[in-house]
Length: 152
Image (cartoon, rainbow, N blue to C red; front, side):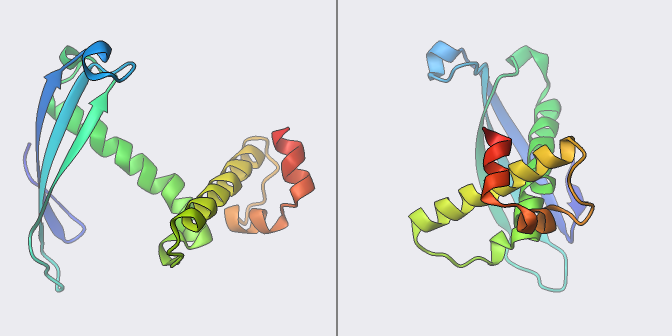
């Protein structure tokens, strides 16, 4: 795939895919495995050393249903959805990236509570009851009794 330029960097991605079956790899519904090699060169004023990474993926899309470029687009779209969806709520509304809780159990508990708050907000929004102010304001108005009533 040609290099992509954006966000003050150039990123090259290459993919290697292999067909598999759920029985062979032990993952229900998995029909192919992929490894994506990424190398990234910073262009901005704060140039960092070039970075490279390999990401491994299991997919329910059959090997013959997509090309290498198509799989790279699916993977990129998946991460874009996460970054612009759930992570956006969790970071912007609840300041997750700035949270410095170091104890693993406490960090997991906080992440679960943030996910619950986002889920409750989405329920309210889907039923047209969420305020226009957004997830953070809606979460501040949420009481335990109201949340319990929604999920039970």
